[in-house]
Length: 114
Image (cartoon, rainbow, N blue to C red; front, side):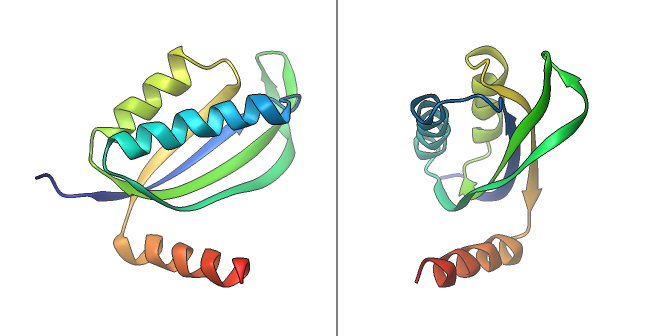
């Protein structure tokens, strides 16, 4: 069995997404993580911002942040989903983070939901 790694993904969506379209994007991301034995610690809408330059003719975007652990292949799977299967995500970046940072985000999420 491979070791699970901890990741943080920041992705930018179109500002005009409906709730149903956003739910489909999030379900696809969640499925990819689950398929790689993953667990999501934090999934939040971060901010709606004006962009420094137009991306696919959009001058605004909504940022979402995701902290999770999964097998190493999850990054390639998410990248495939973001690039080829989904025009709703304008940009994305994934970083491998230390376990302590991920667990800190998990504890913050749990205290905010109480």
